Image (cartoon, rainbow, N blue to C red; front, side, top):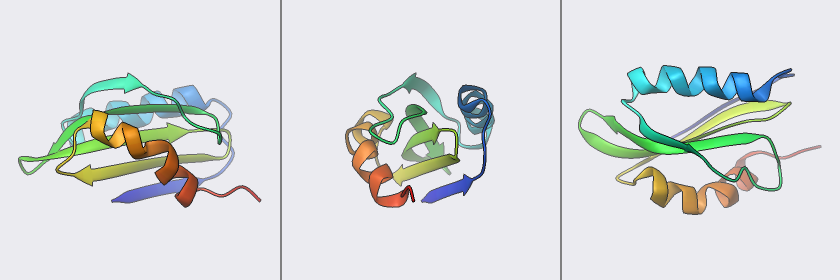
Length: 95
């Protein structure tokens, strides 16, 4: 599952913190840790979540122009982290 929005973000770190705080209740995300955001920059975190008792890996990023999230079923945050930068590069394009 992929969700994202574009717009001007004055404080990407605050936007990321706000988004991940909400995820801890919605997807029961735990073990959120900062990760490398990749060549597109910004801030990123990955962690472990659950959707109806199904484990999911969750990675969220925020930069000056976007806020996005990738959720992968049957993966841990650590497993998804290994693919996060390449997945984000396929999703987000700069013009």
